[in-house]
Image (cartoon, rainbow, N blue to C red; front, top):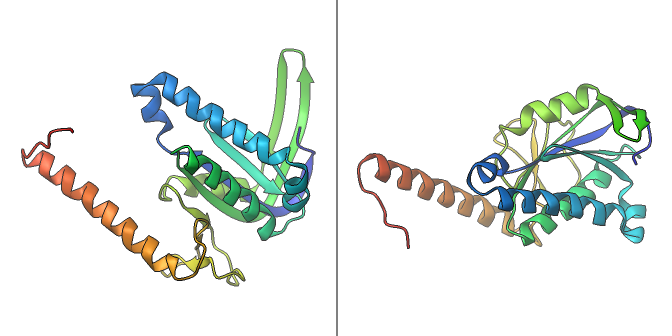
Length: 205
């Protein structure tokens, strides 16, 4: 169980993409995806070696994970999130994560045999939560951060104060390739939708 925390730190809100659609179309698939998300967080948090490196606490809220760095360092939470995204994508699930730095409070208020009450609040949690649905699947996005993070994997997002972390890259030359392929994927989706509404229905293979 996470320890009580109060102060400024980096807080992340990670959403399991497509969960609601899975629930509508295939409940067993949705439950499997959710189980894998929770298992991944548990495995990372109970890896003795990695736990010493990350120092992150996390809780599950429906199909989302709220996590925060106990040592208040950006690298701490990014290490945890990169591992989480990587484990989920291996199972063909995507997360989208937003990170904010501000005040944050977590408290275990009450625990009985049939009731557990948790209290979380603060600007960091609210900012990360509110921006999440505006973030594309697969992304890790740092909100309103000045100065720039000190790592080549961080790139400014569309001339804003937000920064995207390219967690899946092994070399800085991969970043333009990822951006290009994402644009292609968007265009293909748009072309398919346009074709459907124009009456050019594509048969499923």
